[in-house]
Amino acid sequence: MLYNKTRPKNIQSFDTILRENYEELIRIHCKQQLKCQINLLSKVDSSIDQEKLKDLIQYFECDTNEKINSTLINSQWMKTFQTSIMDLVFLVFERQKYRSIVANQFEFDVARFSENFHNLLTLVDVINALTDKTRQSTFPDKFILQSSVLLGINNQFNQDNTEQSNTSFNTIADWQLIHFMNNHPLIDISFVQFINDLPAESVSNRIYYKAYSSLSDIPAISIRIRTKVLYLFNLLLENLVPMIDSSLLPRQSALIDKILAGRIYMLYPMKFRLFNEILANTEIMSSVDVPTINFDSLQANSTSPHGQYTMIHQANKQLHSLAHELSRSKYDRLWLAQYFGMYSIDQDIPYRDSISCICDDICSTRLPLFILCPNGRTNSGRNRDRWIPNCFKFHLYSGIRAGGGIGDELESPNGDPLELYRIVFDITFFFFIIVILLAIIQGLIIDAFGDLREQLDSVKETLETKCFICGIGQDYFDKEPHGFETHTQAEHNFANYMFFLTHLLNKPDTEHTGQESYVWEMYQSRKWDFFPIGDCFRRQYESGSGGTSTES
Image (cartoon, rainbow, N blue to C red; front, side, top):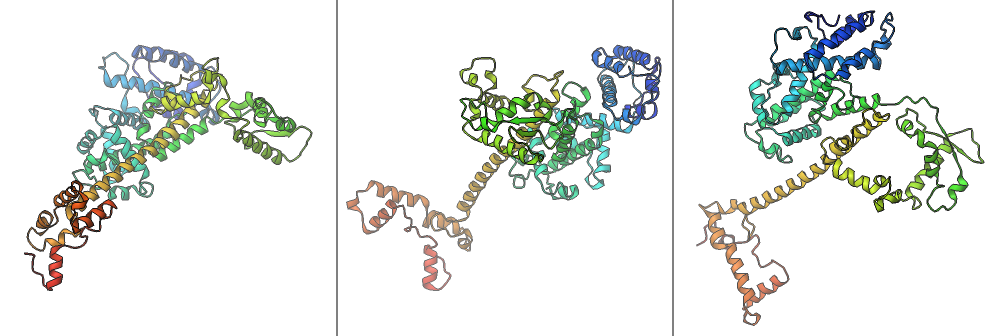
C-alpha cells in the first residue's frame, strides 16, 4: 500500500512504488485507498491543490483486474502519475522543513526515500541557495560531499569556502560566469584541465577576466570555487533529467517549477538537452494524411489588387485549418502539390516548384508583409493587434525586458487546445532571443569597453615610460640618477612646448623670427616635424664627443 492510515511507515519514492508495487496500484481496492490517502494529505496541508489530488483518482478508472504492462508504465498516464506523486511528496516535505511537526501529524520517514529522490531534494536546496538574493541560504551537506565523488578529490570544496564564494556573487556575476564557462574551449574537453587553467589568487584578477566587469572585482579563488559549484549542479541535474517532465507548463507542477527556476545556472549542453526533450515531447504524430493543394497557375500569374490569387494565398487558404498540425509534424513533405490542367506521378518536382513560387511571392512587392493588416495602421478593428509592426513593437518592448522571454508577458495557455505549440514558441523565443541574441549583444558591448580600457591603459603606460616630445624610452635616461625625470622636466618639458605654441598664436605673423616662422608654418599644416623625435641634447652630445659623459 502507498500509505498506512495510522502511521505511514512504508512511504517509498515513486520509482520504487512503480517497480515493486505496480500491480497493487490498480487492484480492486486501489481507488478506495487513494481516496483515503487524499483525505489524509488534505489534513496535512490545506494548501495542496485539491484538483491535483483528485486527478489521481481519474488515473485508476481503468479495469481493476488489468495488470500494468511495460507499455502502460512508459505511457503518459504513468508519467503524469509519477509527477503527481512527486509533487505530493515534495509539498509535504517542504512543509515539514519549515514548520514544526506535532506528534499526531502526518510525516515522512526520510530514510526510506530512494537515492534519486534524495538527490532531487538536494537539487532543490542547491537552487534555493543559488537564487537566494540575500545569500543567507546554505548549500546542503550532501551536495558538498558529492564534490569529491563527481569532481575528484583534488577539486572538492567544503562548506566554508563555498559560503565565502557565495557571498561574493550576485545575479549579474553568476550570469557572466555562466557565459564565461559556456564559451571557454576547455569546458567540453576536460573539466579538470579547465579548472587548473583558472587563476587561484586570493585577490581579483582583472587581466584574466577583463571581458567580464563583475568577475574582474571578485577574488580569483572565489570564482574558481563558484565554477566548481555550478559545474557540479549541472552534473547532478544531468543525472536527474529522466525524472523531470519537461513538457509541463508553468504552475502545473510545484517541483518542476522549482527546478526550472535554476535554468539560468544551466550550461549550454544541459539547456540543449532539455530543449531537445521538449521538442520531442511536444512533437505531434499527425493523424491526417499529407494534404493536397490545388494550385491555379493562371490565376497566380494574373494581376490582383490585394494578391488574393498568389501562390502563397492559395496555399494559406487550403492549409489554414491544418497549420497547427503541419508545423510540428514529422513528415518531411508538408503537402502534395497539384496544378490545374497538369498531372504528374512524380510529386517532387511540383512540390519544389510550389515552394519556389511561394518564396517568390514573399520576397516580391506583390505581398508586402507590413501591410497585411491595414487595421493596424489605423488602430481600429478587431484585428488591429495582428499588424506586424505592432507585434514587433510589443515583442521588442515586453519580450526582451522579461527575464523568461515573451512567454512571461502573454496570458497562460493552460487548457488551450494549442498549448503545446505555445510551449515551443515561448522556449524558442527565450533560447534564441534572451539566451543567445542578448548574450551576443552584451558580449559585443563588454568587448568594446574592454578595448577602450586597454587603449587608455596603453596610452597611460606610454606617457609614463617614454618622453612625449622625443619618444625616447625611460631606460635610456635612467643610466644616470633621475635622468628621465630631469629630461622631461628640464629639457623636453611639455608645458614649455605648449607655451611656445600659445605664444605663436598670439604674436603677429610679421613679427615672427626665422625659427618662429618655420614652426608656425608647420603648425598651420598640422605637421609635427619640428618636434625632435628620437633626438635630444644628451644624444647629440654623446654622438659629437664619442663618449658617454652626461650633459652639462
